[in-house]
Image (cartoon, rainbow, N blue to C red; front, side):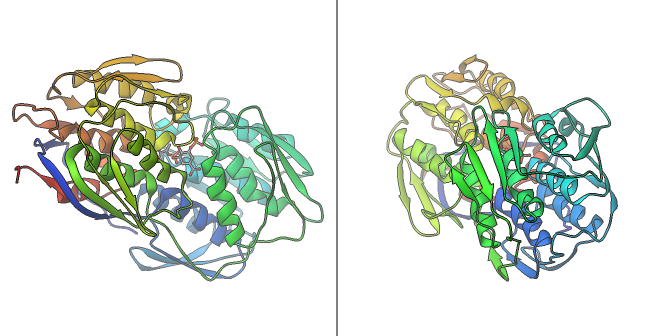
Length: 443
Ligand SMILES: O=C(O)C1=C[C@@H](OP(=O)(O)O)[C@@H](O)[C@H](O)C1
Ligand SMILES: C=C(OP(=O)(O)O)C(=O)O
């Protein structure tokens, strides 16, 4: 879990004529970080297999260690966590959260409920990513959370509060991670009484809530669900380790390879995630099918291949905001204008992804309209060679590697991706994996 990679300042991707092959996916970020926290909060020891080894999981592992939770690394993908039954050995800690939403949001709720003296901070972008809806929900039930910088954003100082929570509410329209955080902390509050969480207004990114509920269930806690409006945890439930747990391959990471197969011929197969996945982002493959790609699925794999020019798509992508970025770049290879709707959350992620996507797609010649919560992309006749800026956003780097696929001739010019090290957030070996399916000669 401690390996450091050396990355150049930029990567020049030569035009790729054809893609083909099989990629073994790294573990799911969403499942890895939830599993680590649930394992720490549970009674018993959990062996986690195929855990993601990346910046985002590193900050969660580092935080757990600072909080006094013991864990041992068996090998790069296997960690044994010694759960502490909802008690934290260390009552004071300064926690660096990098830019990991899946670390800071659930930890904020758990620490506020357990109580202690904690500070949580991250990289500068983390201090621009909203957390106010979660802090409001927690302070409303007696938590003691203060902003040490700007109101509504990390860094946070958490002190011991007096939690009295039968019923609480949280807004769901900025990030689903706030509800995830409260759900995961709810069994720690449901001491002798039920806890109900009401969702105020629209809830975005719903499939991530399903991941949360699924994993809580595997750690022994059932949540009663009233549609997407409210969630209840009955008393008398506590997290109990399932003993060992396997992390699926990351479905968002799968999107780059599946799109490559659809654009660059294929077949490209991803292994580690399949038709029974608990990750909403497997539905990315449905969107690719709508664009005309041929997709096949097995229990533990998905495969995509091209079937002529991709068809433009006009769809709501609220359910798969991360993988939707891959659709935006795949749209460069479509037969007309594509529209991606209901993706306002892009603005508060690793960067303002609507602005970044529009800027970089224009560099390769696309005509782009950037709306408050949508983007339309009209591809050029030929992609222009360009230097792509990545805004310290792993997904900008990964999805723009697809612009090297030479579905449209680029007269031999490389596509330059600046600052490729940002992929370390979720996929440190991304460019090696991409190179393994890329063929630069037609055969
Ligand atoms: O809960 C999760 O694991 C995630 C939820 C999504 O965020 P939002 O709910 O903020 O859209 C997603 O973009 C993020 O990468 C991971
Ligand atoms: C939005 C993302 O990350 P985070 O978990 O930090 O929200 C992402 O991985 O695309």
